[in-house]
Image 1 (cartoon, each protein chain N blue to C red):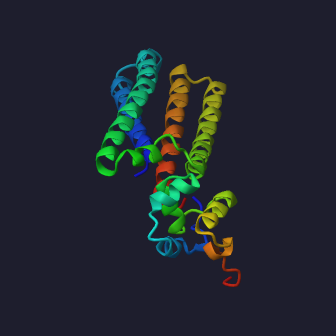
Image 2 (tube, rainbow over the protein chains, first blue to last red; image 1 turned 90 degrees about the vertical axis):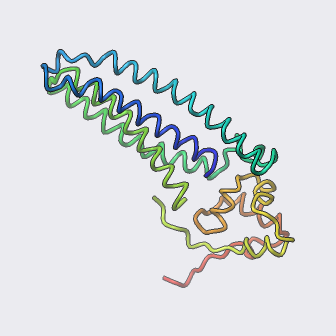
Length: 152
Length: 74
């Protein structure tokens, strides 16, 4: 597993945990009160901020852990060769994942516009954008991981 | 997802002929990661022309001795 594969895997796990936490805060309220009264704003802000911070911390931990493991297993030269050297295949896979994720984000934005036009509550609009942004990032990461393992 | 490439290569044999050059050594000399050399060698990734020429240069052979593209198998 390459350095960028490990970073992407860690990022996907982190974002899954953050989304699960957000769902645990919001979903239980949905059956108990009108959506206009659901307290989703603070959990959403926490999910975004904590998600960004956690992804940075996870990337650092994975990098340091990988460097130590690679140094012990193959020596310092292997670390120099592996780290920070994003080559043309990494860039190609990165572009592929970002492009596919971008398509999904476009769908989410159009969906949010439709919800606004139809005068749905801001709860639905905000969650459409939040889930759309999360899904686009997750889809992009999954495609990158498949690409690293498979056809590219 | 792109289809596996039809381009074949002789990198494994060329590495063997070059004193069993490792994938890591080849990767270092052409400026890519070992995983990319592995993907090229297994036909899962078609490198750019620049990397293809660098590989040929490392083994001091013409490009067509490294990569082949079957044109008549449709």
